[in-house]
Image 1: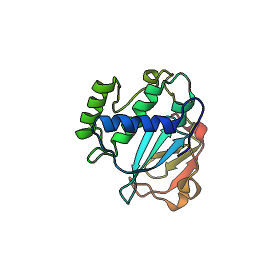
Image 2: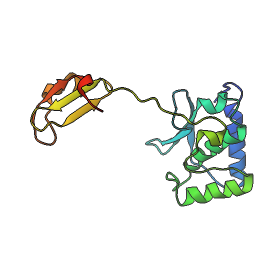
Image 3: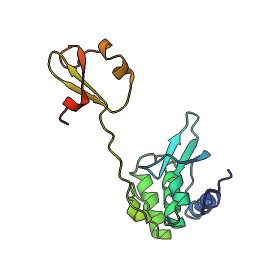
Length: 179
């Protein structure tokens, strides 16, 4: 693993986290891959369990490149995800919570289930609402289907039936919709 993005080096941060977990007597599962996610906007990290029992961890790129976010804040996210690899710790309860509480008390961390941007030292992410581009109305019961993006349904709506009454859909103008 050779990651050096911006100011913080993921490889060094991960090594420090392994050292702290080792000192705390916490053994992680087998983490085979670390990724930097440059598209993540609403989460700091993610842990995935592979079919063979190994794990992959993704860390949001913003944690590593934004100088307002401290190394401690990065390590909190890395440790959060690493704890998910421990046996019985995929959820944020039970052993996962016990381990997080222990690390918080031992190292002064604030590892928890959800962390806001302001807790990391940056503004909270505000998602931009996409406008509705596609609008369909059931010809029988008047049910309205709104879609923001093109999909199988928007391309082939004549092949679908209303879930309420079984009626057919017709395409409506978005300007007719009073969202």
